[in-house]
Amino acid sequence: MTMLRLSHVGKSLGGNAILNDISFDVERGEMVSLLGPSGCGKSTSLRCIAGFEDIDSGEITIAGRVLSTPGRSVAPEHRQLGIVFQNYAVWPHMTVGENVAFGLEVQHLSRAKITERVNEVLDLVGLPAMAQRYPAELSGGQQQRLAIARSLVVQPSVLLFDEPLSNLDARLRARMRGEIRALQQRIGITAIYVTHDKIEAMTMSDRVVIMNHGVIVETGTPRDLFERPRTEFAARFLGAANIWRGVVREGRFHPQGGQSIAIADAKDGPATAMLRPGAITLTGPGPDAWPATVTASTYLGEAFEIVCDCDGLEVQVSIPSWSVSIDPIPGTACHLNIPAAALRLIEADPTNTGEPS
Image (cartoon, rainbow, N blue to C red; front, side, top):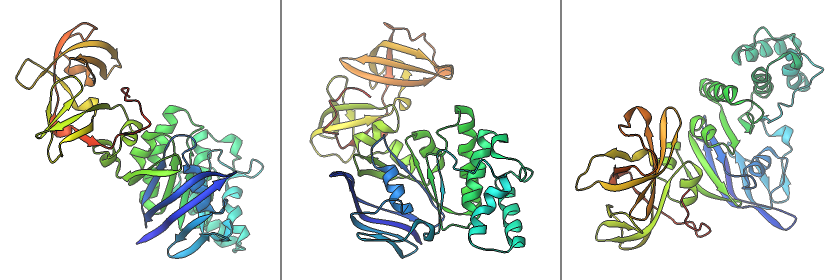
């Protein structure tokens, strides 16, 4: 069942289009990330869903209930939404228990019901012994759990996350990614997660909506978007990628340099292809191996990030360090296995000059 739907939503500020015909659905119990660079429209989309911004066109519904249309907007407090902000948004002068209870007190529930519900939610987020502490006495991760508890206690239909991990250090951020995702799956709540961090989007989402310049570029599962992107923007934004211009002739892709590669179900003509560096391996000489020369090499512990020249074609390669049998210093001759099955034809980005990502 569709829980949240944006249909042809448009929003302009100061005469500039911030959202341009945005449409996507979120199913009940699904976690969907809005991913893109700063200024792409993801946070504005969240604010429109929350009711903090009116929309100029289109419609926003939750469980079939219309929340926003041009000229009509349900107030944020009546949308049955929970929101977790980047800055936690907890009351510093209230204890943990008082912070969580606040939303229930506004609803005028009985003291017994409030106590019961607060204890349930604090246990759910792993803060059962923290009810009498103040936010300043909590770690960053605990404060984020408190913010989530405040949002969950009112039993929202949809939970919105607005870059909630941006203020945490890398190690804590990685741990909180797993905790938030596990919690969302355990309680089965529908969630929208706004982020500019591709790792957060890839590891936490059922689906990802990639945005740029106020439009949706591409939508799909994390694996589909990474391995089988349709667009050059998505291919580059989600990670390192070899982007090659060339032409398709008689079932083979001919890049501008290097050797041709078999490509299935492709029409003859100019084309742009994408191949992830991790799909390429070092190999010995052979009929399908590409002779190459290492031009740059970076050791990252678990892997080597290598750049090779193949007859004028730059090729990025990412190889587990334990599998490298040569010392890939610049000038080293090698051979590359280019797997045709991992090559993808994509829609070229007309704003990109074609330099490697």
